[in-house]
Length: 70
Image (tube, rainbow, N blue to C red):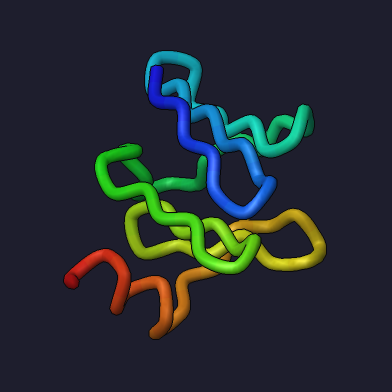
């Protein structure tokens, strides 16, 4: 289990259950996520090259891939 807090956003990542809890709301992982690379910038959450969008869905974006690589 990984806990991270940045800019008022608390992120709890549980790899055994394959979920991420952001401010008390659970988001299931999509295929391809391992929970190795977690980044929170300006309230946006990036995990393993995926970004959580406003609809609460994980989406692979160039910005998320940038945070994964660097």
